Image 1 (cartoon, protein in one colour):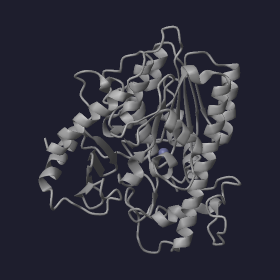
Image 2 (image 1 turned 30 degrees about the vertical axis):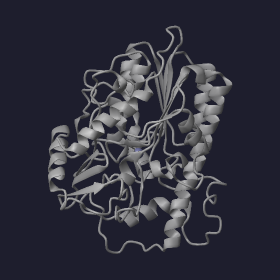
Image 3 (image 1 turned 135 degrees about the horizontal axis):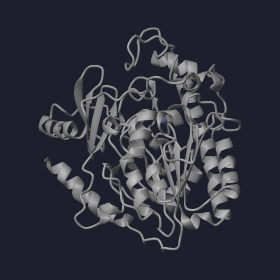
Image 4 (image 1 turned 90 degrees about the vertical axis):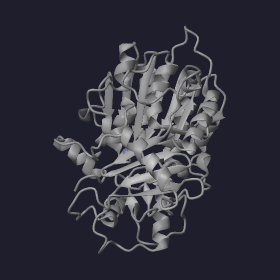
Length: 439
Ligand SMILES: [Zn+2]
C-alpha cells in the first residue's frame, strides 16, 4: 500500500473522531430528514468556497452542523447514485437484493414518508420500498416544502424518516423570478431558461448520438460565446439560490415547532453538473470532480458545528443515520457510520470510488485515478494542486497509479453502471423526457 494511502487512513480516523456526539436520551424520538438536492455540485455553495452568495441557508446549516467538504458520490447519475446511497453499496454492487435504508428504519418502527421529484427516483424503480407514503411531484421545493410542513402538522407520527428530493437545481435551468436574473442582471443574449433543456442536450450531442454513453458527436454543436456560457451558469446558480430559500423556510418551520431539537437534518446531492470543465455540459457521462464532488451536511441536535476535512462517501449516509437512531448497520452495508469511525480499532474508508458507464475512479486524497472512459485509458490527478483534473501525473507516478488501480479493481465489479433502467412505464418515460434524459 502506498504511503499516501496509509497516511490518509490515519488522518481520517483522527479527524472523524470529532464527529462523535452524545447518545440520544432513550426517551427522545430521533427523527431524520434527508434532503437530496439533485445535481448540486459542491463548489457552487458558499460554505464550499463559492463567492457568489448562492446558499446562505445551506451555509448556515453547514456551519451549525457537521460539514463534510470532501464528500464523493458513487456515480454521476441520479438512479445509480441514489440506489448506492440508500443501500450503502458501491454503485456496480447495489442490486435489488440489498435492503433500502427506509426498509431498515421501518422494521424498527420509524414512519417513513418521501416527497420526491419522481423521474430517476420514481417509486417504480424500487425507491418506494419501506415508505408508507412515497409522493412523486414535479413542482419542486416550492410545493414539496409546504406539503411536507402540512404532513408535519396533520399526519406526523414520531419517530419519522422523511426523504425530500428535488430537481430544482436540475435542467432546465429555469429559476423563478427574481432568481432568474439574480446572478446576471444585464444579460441581453439569446439564452432563455425554459429553452436550456434542448440547448444543453444539443451541446452534449444527446439529440443525435449513435452510442449511449459518449459525449456525442463533437461536430455541429451550437456555439456559445463566453457571455452565453456565463449566463447558463448564472441560471444554474439562480436555481441553487431559489432551492436554498425553500430550505431556509423548511428549517425555520422546524425551528418554530421545536422539531430541530429531536430531528437530524441531512443535506446532500447525488452528483454535480458539468459546465465545460472537461469539454461539455450536464451529468451522467464522466466521474470528474465536477460530477462526483457533492455537498454533505449532518445537523445533529446537541452536536456543535464541525468541519471534517477528510474524504467521505455518500455510502456513509445510511449507516450514520442508523447509528444516530441507535440501530446497527445492515450486514450488506459497505459504508461506515461517521460516528463508528471514531471508535477504537474501526477501520476508516481508504478511498472513494465512483462509477458511470465505462468510467471508474478512486480518490485517495490528494490522488485520484480515473480509468476507462471512451478511450479506455487511465489518468492520475493531484486534487490538491490541480482540483480541475487538467494534468495527468500518471507518467511520473506510475507505481502509485498501479496501486490505486489494484485498490479500485478490488472494490468495484467489472460491470458498467448504466444511467437508466429498462422497461419504464410510459408515465415515467414522459417525466424523464421533461428532465432531458430521453429523446
Ligand atoms: Zn441526479
